[in-house]
Image (cartoon, rainbow over all chains, first blue to last red):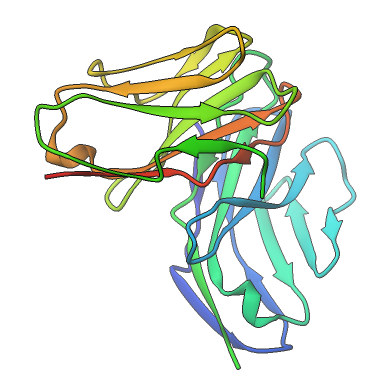
Length: 116
Length: 112
């Protein structure tokens, strides 16, 4: 079974600064996907970024980028030029590349607060 | 707005009762997933449907059941409700398998 670990329950950073959220996972699979989801106070789950395990290049979406280290089974999220709207819970999630069972396995989340 | 809709937004009921949660996926998405988010269990996968057929099951209790209809909307039925079933229930949909899952706003269930 896959497990996802987010070891930082809470973090805070000043507006406009850069922050990195950590995630590690455990799997015996070789092909899989990793995701970061954001859950603001509205409780809506919003997809932030996705990384395919077979891709060596780290994914980037505007101010959000990841550092994917496959051998270390590490998948961190970097938020640059942080904004007040980035305040949210952030969940790391794992999905096997397995047609027929595409469930997401989530970590416990990191609560990020952006300080004005 | 993800394009996934869920009704109702809030539901308050009593122990022992039965409720039905409804989900409409994004237009064209064939896969529907149900997740439960609770304080003690975190976000847990319950069940997946693909084009009307059950595709995968997670930690779904026997008191819970789901189905996906020909128009692709899905319903999650929760019966013999217990206090511990109080949670936020999410539906998600995806166009591809495997693919990005887009979540609805959730149904907040409170069992008293």
